[in-house]
Image (cartoon, rainbow, N blue to C red; front, side):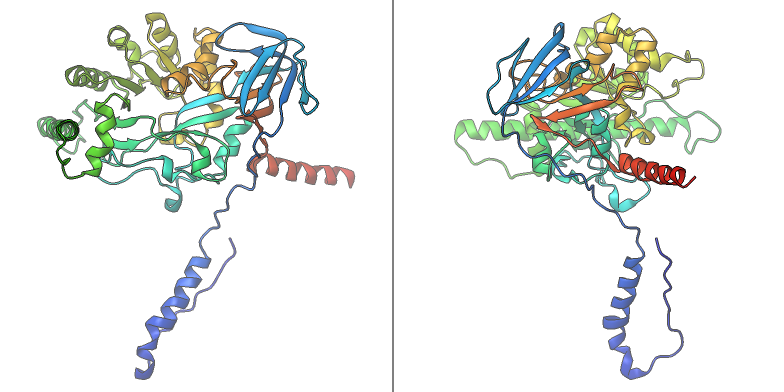
Length: 467
């Protein structure tokens, strides 16, 4: 950013100029101030055009994920869908044939917990559109706030992440809003949308009391505050349920519906079984409290975060509560936990029969690094999770938990042609994504980082040419 000087005039002002000052000088000063704001440019990568002819990936090793690994196999895309899978598939005159011999074909990776499109630079307030104020914001929709020009979308695509759940945050814990499943290529948020309303997100409050001498309040007061918040949440949930019941009863009886309340209107699909509830909780007491609440309310939930999920694996299995694991690289929650507690979490859940997928980091430092998703899963492999299960945890299982498993997450006939072609195992850091397709559209894998790499590589090359 260039340095700019703003001159402020001090001293008395002639009376005749006083009236003109607000209209002229303030406007000028405002323009000068705004001109000093850091420039926030949009991504320069152009979205891919629609698929207009058949595309055949010829001779690759196809990792279907849902079934066997197929050697020397072709995959045919037609109209954005996988039309055929087999050896030496027939091709028409207008079929584009891409030789992928010696390479691997996988479904596009699915990031099940992100802020993609809602958060660009955490330190710049104007680029943070992740949360609304207040405890109860069920009508907030992440879908319409997604910035399709985010620089972070191309970065994630370059490492194979082609689909994501973008999630609203909670400025004051509890109901944050409704997440959306998006594809990571398109001109507008409408282009990106796959599932406009994926889940209602509830952030469970911290249940542990701070008993340290530095605590702001005594434990008894903390407990009262916690009980008050839980009571307020229960009252809000009851009000939303009563609203949904009143609306249904009015429709059945042919009476006018109750006055519209946008908050409770947004929650009505929860009570009709259309919209799932995702509860964010990490610590043991949080998870137990959330499970008990879900049982009382007869609500099917998915746990997000789940750092202590391995401690209650039997309860999760009995209640059929799946887990979106986030934060594999975080520290253990307690000083006396094993150092590898976050790393072994996935394998312990798998062994207990709990459905799960692996997402990125749960804390703020991890958002924006969705490209590291495969390495989060690889960490679980190093601590016992079978490699095939680790691939499923970031493809098919993730798609299933987000409600799009019939469309994405595996290489199967009839599913969307959202796939990647790699030169190795995507869980390995040296592996490069050679090709990516979203709904049959070939995606440009360039991004701001690769452009800067190429720029300065060229500088070094020229310096070398100069001796």
